[in-house]
Amino acid sequence: MGTFFYVVLAFLIGVLVGWFLWGRLRGELDSLRGDLDRTRSERDRLRTDGDRLTGELDACGKTRADLERRLREASAAPAAGSSAAKPASQAPAALMSTPATAKSAATKPAPAKPAAAKAVPGKAVPAKPAAKPAATKTSAPAKSATSKPATAKSATAKSATAKPAAGPASGKPDNLRRLIGIGPVNEKLLKAQGVTSFAQIASWAAADIKRIEDVMNFDGRIARERWIEQAKLLAAGNEKEFAKQFPTAGTASNS
Image 1 (cartoon, rainbow, N blue to C red):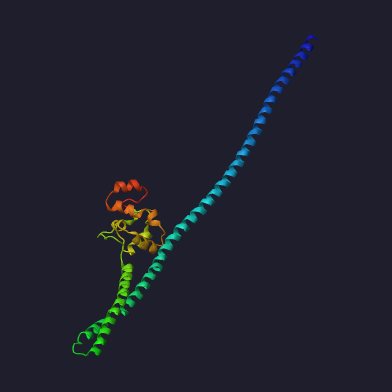
Image 2 (image 1 turned 180 degrees about the horizontal axis):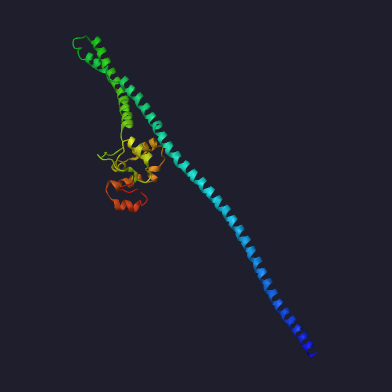
């Protein structure tokens, strides 16, 4: 009887201990399941954020490629426009010089000489015929006077079209690309106008600036980019002051 009682007591104690251990293990298991669910939800959220960021990165890449394409087109358009503007701007000057030369040739005071020579030998002629040489003498200066402005106009037109840029050109051409605003296209246009040195640009007057801007299809760009100030420093050999005032300009080895 005593043995049976101890067996029942041991069974009850075992059941109680097992129930206690099972309760604790079940709590731990529920906690681990909760942590696992939270980890999965965090993983899903991070995956969603990763997909969103990938989409934004692709959109930024497309925008950048579009902007680079537009920049290339915009930089290519002014270069083509400036190269095409050169023959268009030079044509009116040639047309202006041709009629002026023709006009000067047409109004050349060659007939004035015979008129003056004819008026001289009238020494033994009576009073009435002497009036005729006087009339021709007065008409000859009038004709030559009218032809002088046309000759001056043709000379002015010829000098305006054939005049190179102000300032003497040195024997060895300078590297004009050192100046801010002068690239390969602008350098070719300047050389076509006879501008090959910094000293020439430094000695430009208002008329020279207007003529160059008309040829190169500029509008105040020479003053904005301070070409003359840059050229004065380089022509004087003041490299230190030039580098200080224009740090973004090209170096001596710029090509």
